[in-house]
Length: 187
Image (cartoon, rainbow, N blue to C red):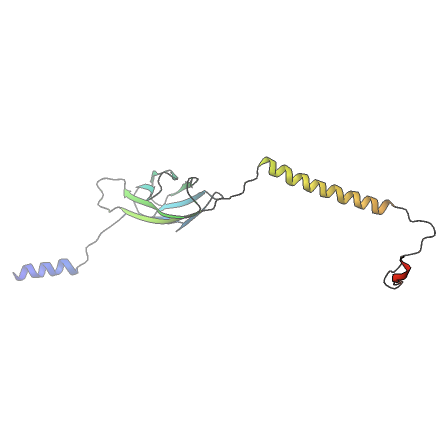
């Protein structure tokens, strides 16, 4: 009985070695601005000492988030880029959040290394524009701008092309030479 207690004590307090395949993922979070920015790239690096297989998938909205490549192999210290694109055209304006899961497992089936993974939070900010420029709206705006420009050119040509009259006084200051008219002279 004493032997069993000592063995049990050793099993609980003596650390046993364990290994897991390792990966490094950058960036740590992804923000998409729909419809302006709909594609981002993540970089995955194998930091373990053996070849691994990587699986990348979206936890939610898997039909709206496209991941290329979703499964690939990495040798030790090898780096790979993964494209993440989103199509949220059928969603209302707002914010949608989910995670991108990146799992890695050893390529060798005889390896005792555990599967490791990383979750990358992804936020999609959906901003739908209520006014869209149609052909008729563009025509109206361009027409009014050209009309205003034409009017200003016509005004400047008329102002600068007039010749001064002969025997005309130099600029008359109306504030100084103003004479008040009397009511009885109007009749």
